[in-house]
Length: 172
Image 1: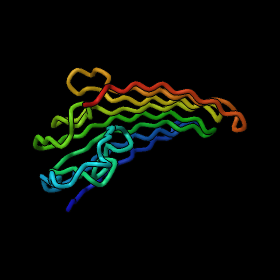
Image 2: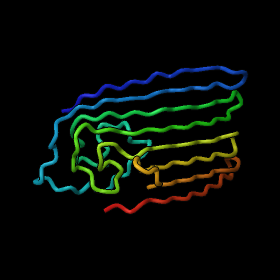
Image 3: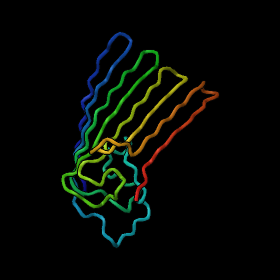
Image 4: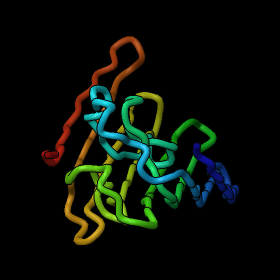
């Protein structure tokens, strides 16, 4: 069993042809500890990557063989600027905090300590023909990068070119 409370408070400001949105985001999840008995083999939840897409998920495992237990608090901040002509810029920072230490997550996942690694994302789209995005996961103690991802997409819809750079720190 799980119970969760999600909270968002978007604040908007119009300045000429640009709208800015600042949105604090938080969630609190409560579930019992010890939901992963050794009798159930872990076949589909081995690979785990903490990022901006699953920071606020009820369980951050990719499959159903493992569940995330215990109370935890997730929080973050979204900021975006959106132009009337379609251009946009957005930034997100977030982190998770578990109340009690839990050995559910192995070293290198970003969730092995009470405080998770810091998750960040930045996107820049000045027009319809170019998109640039950057995603990272930083060690919460010394801010060293554990993951970096840069993606650039450019060109008209009929001839869209894309390039990516990925760096992942090795997991156990």
